[in-house]
Length: 115
Length: 113
Image 1: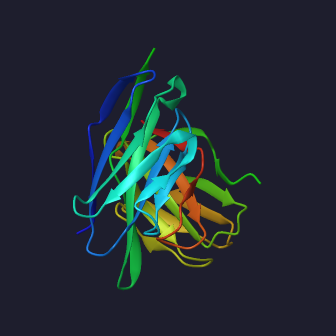
Image 2: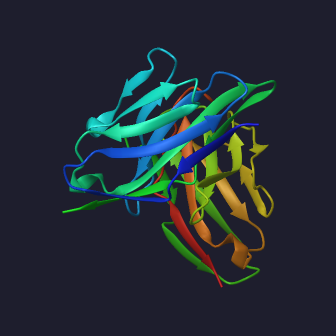
């Protein structure tokens, strides 16, 4: 069965520190993987997407994620946090099955950035 | 382009009342979705549509109905609102399905008392 687990509902970092948000997935077929960001009182926006072209995916605002098949992980990183990165981040996995497709979102990780 | 818009932004209902949420997209996307977002639970799919005139059930469809009479619009209806339907509702659209990113509207905050 398809599932997404985001480790840590809240992550706090200092400005300038490394950001690491963890996502593990399960899927019966090679999936498409996404990271979305949600700023307060807004809808979700795409940060980056894995489509099997490259295991290291670069997104907007300096974020990147690495697909590791052996670990079924797709962790999101940014070398240096900025105050404007404070938001909620969602990992999503999408795959096809007979008769349709399914996209599952993780529960989200709220990132706090301290000055 | 306005992208995905939702109407209204906020609404308060009494138990048993009905309402319709409107979603519109101007990107000519085939697929449209309705989600609800509750604290600690991420987004859960209510209903979705893979094209004009089609609808399908998602993960949590009970108590909701949808219609997609025009390609650009996707309506979510609550026939008899319950306090458990207090949530933030998001509409999204995508070019096709599972391999394309979804574009989200700004959300509708619904409170049922």
